[in-house]
Image 1: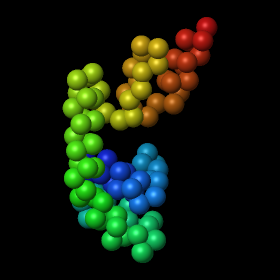
Image 2: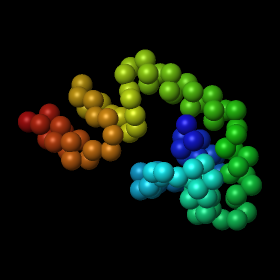
Image 3: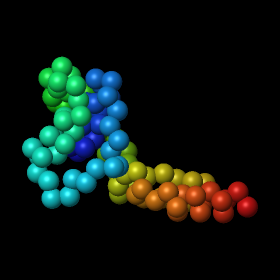
Length: 103
């Protein structure tokens, strides 16, 4: 939930985070927040924290989580290629499925 909020808050202030090239293993809330807000220009930090608690962001995330659970999604990223679900960041598997389906 926190990472989704960070991504959406960044998007709302015109900052795009690369979410998959970060190691947040073992980090607490403050360390995670510092990791993300450290790349923002100083003048955008207050807006970022305001957006982080924007009710519209929270509603969107909760709606997406509900819809995902209904179709069996257990993580992100999650894609379906011609009926083949891929859960997680697995570019080689995606490539393999696409090549197989093209044949």
